[in-house]
Amino acid sequence: MQVNPMVNTLVQHIMVNEEDIGAWRRNLIQNQIFDAQEVKDLSEREISLIHHALLVQKFSQMSSEELNREIENHNVQYHLNLETDDFQMGAVAY
Image (cartoon, rainbow, N blue to C red; front, side, top):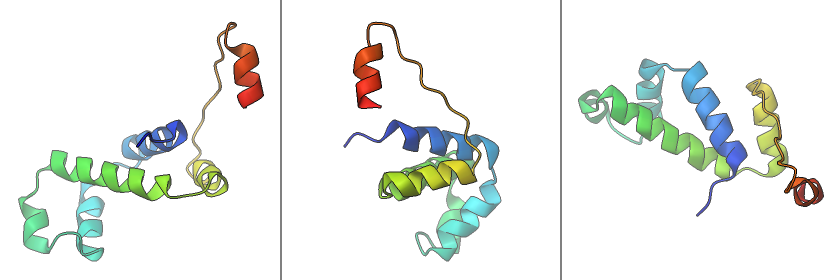
């Protein structure tokens, strides 16, 4: 399955700007993904990877409209960069 590039952009933005391992651990327990002892045994890297995967899953299930709202809510800045050879094709696709 190929992930929408905007999902990847949003997830990366969240991972960088909202890095809070403690909150991510609590989220895993609250959502009953792991119990408290299992979460305690996970490294920060493992927590980060799991959180990343859960965000990708969550945002991949959203419609384009919902995803655009999330992008706006998180103040994600992006731009389109179309090469001259691809400009016409990109403009039509956009």
